[in-house]
Amino acid sequence: MTLSRNPARWWKSAPLQPFSPETWSEQRPTYAQARPGLIRSALSEALSRPSGNWYVIGAARDITAARPFGTTVAGVEIVAWRDTRGTLHAGPGACPHLGADLATARISGDALVCRWHGLRIEGGCSPLWTAFPSYDDGVLAWVRLDAVGGETPTDTPILATRPADTHVHAVAALTGVCEPADIIANRLDPWHGSWFHPYSFARLEVTETPSPDNGHRFLVAVTFRVAKRLGVPVEAEFTCPDPRTIVMRIVSGEGVGSIVETHATPAGSGPDGRPRTTVVEAVIAASDRPGFRVAQRATPVLRPLIVRAAKRLWRDDLIYAERRYHLRSRTEPARPPAAPPGSGRDA
Image 1: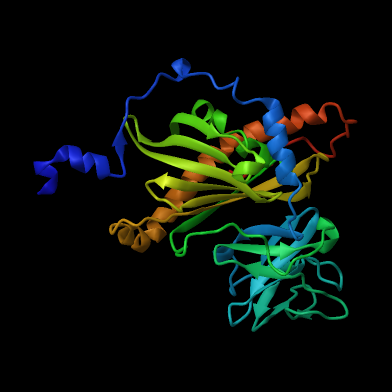
Image 2: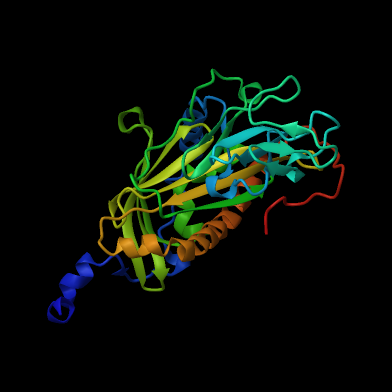
């Protein structure tokens, strides 16, 4: 009824706003603002932050008591699983007997049972196998690798502030041929958004750049494109809580408090000798609108759509990150590949 009496008022308060799209080639160029020195300085500041030796290994919901979860961080094989109480455990991925892949083990009660010879591994420490500190933040699973990180360890990861309710979330992961710094550098260049991702971003303007006075953040006004002439205008900040994480937080507009956490986890070298980095991105949505309760109930349906959108962006952004690594590595001594080079990306 209100809509029919006063449609202008409805449009003003609606999350979707009409806008006149610009022709891609006629956008205002941003290369003058995207100064290489500024991006390098922001990256240097981010890389100087402590991590406590914590690394994201994947979505918390992907690690269950049904089967082990295997991954590699900085060349270290890792196996993770949950016991009958739902507690997260993680440790070396090789069986201490003859090196079997414990990601192929069976979970029996609270323990892993190796399929090669039946060695039983509990979630704590033993003379042969020592667990890694692990942490479940409700969205992501982390592991602490002190020998890899080499920093002063912390009891828990250095987490960004999240919405009080994290029920509506989704996690996407892809792997590229680059180093973690290349992933963070990509996100510390917000000026490329509407040029490189015109299907997602429009009317992008960087209104603040990092300085000690503003907490070393970027502030960006942007419209998230939903359709050709419909979008969601917001203001978002970009900050780095640790050297391998960058967080986009909506500070005004629709969905205030919603965040996108991008984590760059080194995987190690591929068969071609080049580094691989896994991008693990968590989207956590929040809203004060009464209708958001519908989104909460529809999370199982929304989650694949959010993941698909995140992967589309990162397939493009990995081109940026990989290219950055390629240009940097051209000045380094070449290492002959052990196998035909591949992009290393997930399909």
